[in-house]
Image (cartoon, rainbow, N blue to C red; front, side):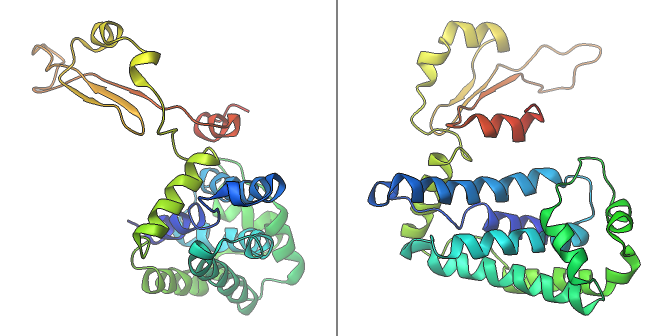
Amino acid sequence: MTATSVLFSLATTANVTADAGAQSTNESEALCEVFRAFEQVNHEFPHLPDQYVMLFVTPRQAGLASRALTLAPPELANYWKELASANRHGVELLKSAGVTQRQIAELAGREFGEFESAIDVAKEIGFKVKQIDPVADKFERYIRKRFGSSEPSSDVEQAALVNAAQQCGIFPDRTTDCARLLAAEEVASAIDGIAEAQTEGECDWIGMELPRGRNQLPGARKELVLRVYSTEATYGWLTGVH
């Protein structure tokens, strides 16, 4: 796991309670908005180098953190505080590298295109990537040291993270009835038989080994994966279609 994935794993799992029923609808939706916003940031940066990704998103995430901090449930409060603190540290490092308050505000309010480079983003906002190289490396080391593992600290926390992600449409709906969505005969027809099946959390079928052919690797199999999410927004993140 890279330092980036550690940070984003925290970002996309640390902010929503599993017991949404104990809060008002408005509070629950506010938590989910923050949850989904962090996940959207994750999907915006697939082509930027890791060390720049982490610094470029800290102003935006720090703003979200300030909003979410008052909504964090008790069982996830410490996890959320760690995330908020890490993002604030990133903003301070940007400032120490000479990035102005105006430029930080632009980063906080800017969405990024899939194929934008770190150099292009920095140039548009008004600073050079070389300017932040030292603090980018420093921040990556900081994240690795502080978040050596993104695993939750308890079973209660684990359950809260998973349930929150499902309720807000980040993780697949674990109540999906795979057999009701696709009959076994349809699956077998699509993947040339069924050798293995996973039907909890998501629907995943692996077919029988395919016959060897001219362009066929030994042991090759077809696979069919079906995931059901609770929000339309997730479809947009995963496919790029909004």
